Length: 362
Ligand SMILES: Nc1nc2c(ncn2[C@@H]2O[C@H](COP(=O)(O)OP(=O)(O)OP(=O)(O)O)[C@@H](O)[C@H]2O)c(=O)[nH]1
Ligand SMILES: [Mg+2]
Ligand SMILES: [Zn+2]
Image (cartoon, rainbow, N blue to C red; front, side, top):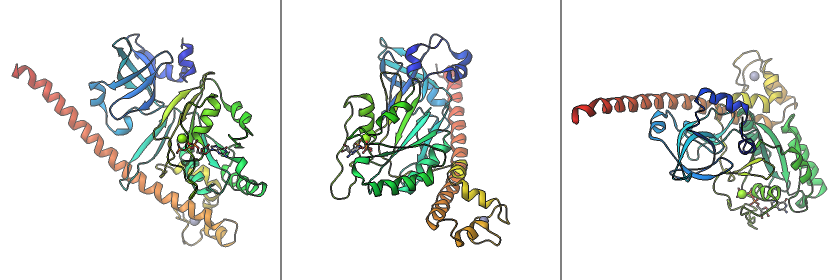
């Protein structure tokens, strides 16, 4: 039996099943609500605590992506009357959302885990940016997460802008739904409320200033979290939210707020690419060469569609750009994984040696 507290937090039979025989009553199940520099904030629906990694778990790590991230379920033991947790393992993840890490190093970062639906938030005014939306869509689809596009600040857009934005978003969205709303006037909020289900986890994504935290406050019915005013001059926000955190609405819906991401480069995006750029990939299946790069080969149907105006230049370029990034990333990720594995093996060997040496020293 799963307790109602855990159900509210999103724990379900899928995780219970993964837990299988290891569901020892000595351990507690909890969810990571935020990641600090040296420890984690966890909640089990009854108590919140700070938790650290057990030494054994630390040494079993092969890669940074095996570390707990926001939204992860962990097994832990609670000490000090439930105020300190020691994390023993991370449960398998239903979904993951990741992005290329900032800087030139090709590495990636987990944004959150076990998300059911991602709200991709873009303002309806002049800040609307279709290529950014495309990037979020690719990452979300790649993570096995359902995207919903939320166009915020409808109060700031005139009817013509609104129509243009809706058309542009509609072109990219495919089958995913689009909701226009205003946190200011309340327009469209009911439609968003209707999507919120008990035990489901939603993640809010979008540029700084898009209105993510404002929406969470609206949905929670209180100004629990701080929002930022947009700078007059360039219309950009100030990155008001600086960390990812998980909060639970009264009805048992989990919301994960994120800071506006500057870089949303994307890795292993091939299947995400295929669904966001479905029409291009479909045309490409008819190219003469199976591995056609669609950049000038003979018998390339994608180039033909482009030249005939059936494919927009901008969309074609975005496709190539994301494809390039995805390819570059996949290669170096594989290399990195190999290196990490070697390092992990080395640590294990050292540890073994240490335990072997001990009896001789004492
Ligand atoms: N007019 C209008 N303003 C809005 C709406 N939603 C949010 N805002 C304003 O937009 C500004 C930025 O909102 P935030 O919620 O802080 O944006 P954010 O996406 O959380 O930004 P970061 O935390 O920096 O990533 C605030 O001044 C909000 O009041 C809306 O629907 N209409
Ligand atoms: Mg915010
Ligand atoms: Zn081609």
